[in-house]
Length: 355
Ligand code: 1CP
Image (cartoon, rainbow, N blue to C red):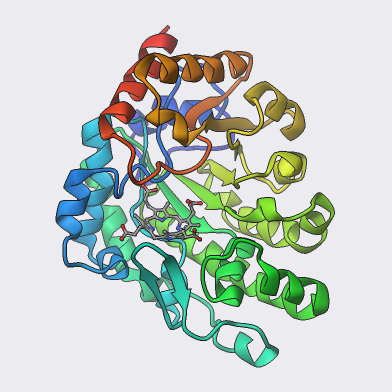
């Protein structure tokens, strides 16, 4: 067995031997494991029902709701892993940043962070700030049995973008203005965010998460030179901070085809690939020693069944030679996706790859 996934206090041998964790370790699997980014959420009627009248951030702070919402897609789709229901901005809210998740928009920060004085608002995250996360992860690992739980956090660059822009951004102009204009302040900001992200991941791992994913969703907005110089060091710091736990670390961003080589160096065990680069080409760019996760275009779920299966077959074919492949979408499930299409996709991948 490789160094990752020594059984921890929380993990049974059934979890450690699950197809998902085996694939993360690049060991032979009984079938290609599959889960979906954003598998919990608005595509599911049972999610919309339990969320009725409850604000997004409030729901993230209620362990009973977090447990129920995290389990919903596992029950319905028979996916090979659960992803913890939370949001990348939860740890920022927990240290007192005045932000909200607005329906139809996403995270909105009341007073953006743009100056040295603003940095003081970014204090370190203590486990006591997110006790509801510890409690929810504990409840989940008890309920999930052999199904592994993936914890997650936002990567320093993607969090910085929300904090600096004040909300979702297409061009990240204020973020890049700070990055180019005040490299010292930028480096300090990313370093603090790396600390917060590491602490948030540690809380989830110590409570029983079997793997963690670092979402650097918007890193694809950067050139590889800027990524290497201004972003990679902070992400390296996060992966190093959680390396000692021996749980697989997954690294994902959107539009990152040109960055896959650099992201492969950040230290993760698994690199997530969006749909723009075929899996075999992605493997060449990432280099040896990493498993890959991906990469069906989420929009393919809207096509007729035969077309969807053809596209999924292509992903499987392109990933055939990889020592470790976790089937996923190239980005999150789109909110208006037919949930039955997701269930059929899980069945298809399992049937096609069963040995
Ligand atoms: O009321 C609602 O239902 C709000 C929609 C929603 C949901 C369901 C948001 C707002 N966040 C979430 C949960 C969430 N967020 C999960 C858990 C669910 C699952 O994966 O099954 C996860 C992993 C996230 C992570 C997240 N939040 C990312 C990284 C993943 C990605 O899609 O790239 C990002 C960028 C966010 C910010 C965010 N939160 C919510 C929205 C709509 C957004 C994106 C806004 C934007 O476009 O910038």
